[in-house]
Amino acid sequence: MQFDSLEAISRYLALEFDLDASDISEMLVEYLGNLSRLIGDAKAASGSPDRLHKVGHAIKGAAANVSSQSISALGRKLEDVAKDGARKDAVESVISELQLQYDELKAQHEAMR
Image (cartoon, rainbow, N blue to C red; front, side, top):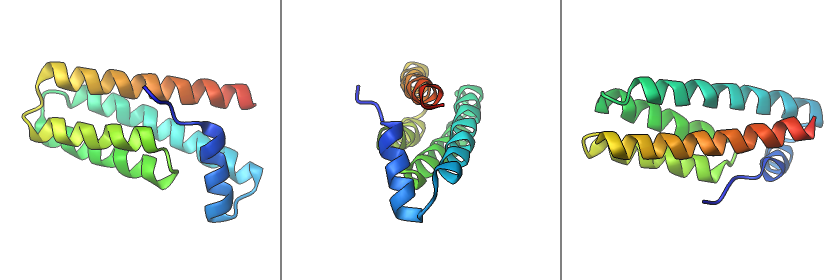
């Protein structure tokens, strides 16, 4: 599994949006908080393909906005799993991958402080 680099995301935000270090830090805190909430929403929606698709779409978009490509791809994968009927094992696998990605980004963020 390939993990997104918080350093690469920070560089993207600085270049794309001309943000300073303080703004980037604030944006990363918000992104990580939203991602944590969305992973919780995915866990809660695991029995509902419709809701799961919406959560997957939200994860995909939020991650794409900050150039978090691995997490965006997992959001897309969650959408696909939902379209295929949201089999419990497939849903759990994607959510587990999302949690690992989140945990890695969170650890990188804490190390940057």
